[in-house]
Structure formats: C-alpha cells, structure tokens
Amino acid sequence: MDARSTPQNARLQAMLATVPDMPAGFSDRARDHWQPPFTPADGNCRKIFAFVEGRPPKEDLSAVSAVTYQGAGVGALAAVSVAVYHGDLSAKRLLTMRDAVSKCVIADDSTPGGSNRLTSFPLPMNEDGWTGRRLKGRVGGYPYEMHLVVARQGRTVMALVNGGVRPPDVKRTEELGRLLMAKVGTLDL
Image 1 (cartoon, rainbow, N blue to C red):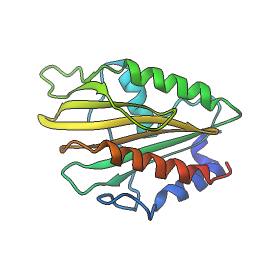
Image 2 (image 1 turned 45 degrees about the horizontal axis):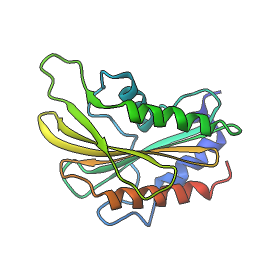
Image 3 (image 1 turned 60 degrees about the horizontal axis):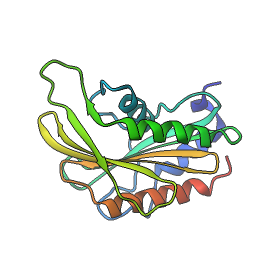
Image 4 (image 1 turned 180 degrees about the vertical axis):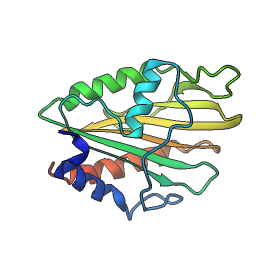
C-alpha cells in the first residue's frame, strides 16, 4: 500500500496544512512539497533532497507528508517532510539520513556549465539528536544558502530546509524545527 493513501497520511497532511504559530516572516499556510532547485550529482545529496521533497526511504513507511511555507525574503522558504515508520524503524532511517547529510559535502548538478553549487558547512545547533548542515553557494547564478536538518521523535523522522537568497538565521531554523516536531509529537499515528 502506498503510504500517501493511508488514513495516517491524511491526518499528517491536515496537521501540516496550517501552523498558526509559525515564526515571524513565514506564512502559516502550507503550499505544495518542496521543489529542489536542481538535482544534485552526489548520491548522498540526492537522497536528502529527495527526503525533503517528500520521497523518504519507502521500506516500512506508514505515512509521509511534505510541504513548504513561504518566507518573507527573496526565495525564502521553509520546507518540511515528515515520514512515519512502523515499529522502531525510524531510528534506522534517521541514521541513514544523518549519514547522507554528513556525506553531502558539495551539492552541485552535472549539467555542463551549470551554475548550481552549494558547499556544506557545519550548522551549530542546540537541539540534542538533530543533525544539520549549512549549504552555501550559488543556485541559478544567484547567491543562495539553506539550512538542512534531520531529526527524529518516536516513529517520526523529519527533514527541514530553511533557505533563501538572504542567509537564514540558525535560531529561526531551530524554532521552526521545534515547532514542527512538537506538532508531529501530538499525533497518534
């Protein structure tokens, strides 16, 4: 059965549709899933971009939802993907995603003459169990920066991107992550 067609998935989508307590500068109404600005040549970067887009590892997946929240700045957005797994397999999936994040050193496309290249840097965060990286460079010829975070709560793994032409604030990324993880934690999936 496709995880996108389960009752759990419908509840997850409804929960993410409107988030009234979004941090200042972000819309509280969800839009469609994230559209990556390019497809990375590196397999680890592709894996984590796919997760944020709403395509997490499928094995033992019971529900998945991915949305974006528009930000106030040029190209600013917060993208979130939440995947719920059967049993305790979310721990294994989190390790897979952490590994992909740590090995995604340079995200660039393989198009000859392409102008998409993001280099990975540490992202210091104050949240236990969260893994994050800062990807900074150029997309479509313009400066771009994104924070990429993966976290787990119970059977749920979440991937979050906070990005834009203007560098995002780490505290805002943490605030978004805490808010969304708290919302997900209220669901009995």
